[in-house]
Amino acid sequence: MKSVLTSNPPAVPVIASAAQPATAAATRTATASGTLAATRAAIDPRLIAALAAVYLIWSSTYLAMRIAVSELPPLFMVSLRYLIAGAVMLAIARRRGTAWPPAAQWLRAAPAGALLFVGGNGFVAIAELSVSSGGAAVVCATMPLWTGVLSALGGERPSWREWLSLGLGFIGVVVLMGGPSLAGEPAHLVLIVLAPVCWALGSIAARRQARTWRTDALMSSAIQMLTGGAASAIAALASGEPLVVHATGRAWLAIAYLVVFGSLIGFTAYNWLLRNARPVVATSYAYVNPILAVIFGALISGEALGVSTIVANVLIVGAIALLFARTRSRTA
Image: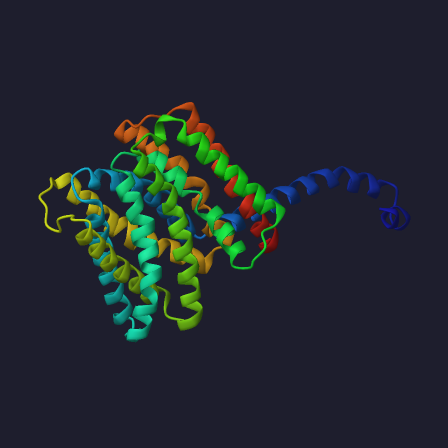
């Protein structure tokens, strides 16, 4: 402004000063419009679709499982779901040109498949014979916390933030056990608490297998689903469950939903997020799913929604947020 005053007549600075607010306002408006347009352009519609799929579909699978096991044996249902989904994924991977995995890879993937789909998903299915779908979802939301504990046992020392999140998560589970959402047979309550532990162990084992074999993600998931589905069928036979049963269309529709939406579409969306979104965004389903699952169970199936359920949701989701805060600070 000093250069304008010294190099121009007195009238010019007055005109310039008067015009400056309007020019600045126009500049701000243009900048804001450009920023808004750039923000809209930067939001990939596929990101919104993938997040919506993971949030809504995976939140609703707990209720779909409870509907299915109301008429079908739980381990048989899990076996059927993952054998079909795994076969479809295997066919797609082969069509894309992925090589057939060697026998050694199938054998080494079997423990991870069994932990994920017998101990993880199978235990949830058995527990939902008496435990509500919302309560099961809230307990299963502790899976990232168990991953932290198991990683510590494997030599990775947790930070104070991770220990604090673990404590909050366990308090949330204890609170939930005192409310109507986690009412059920004692054996089923034990299984629903063990389910996220098995899923965490299976996830760690699957991650190590991925580093060893470096297989295509779709083929790797197909192997895990097929070995886990086969293990579920063996467990169903060993426990005396019938593999052929009569059920209403409602139960078969629930299984179809779990196969198509829960396994195929849900996995595809999550796999896309892992490749194209920041880790905190990709894993944000852990914040959302327990809340939506409780809402779905209450609205659609009339499941009990007590104060303890809300408190447990806040504690567990807060614990997960605290756990992921460390990841956010590293990836920001």
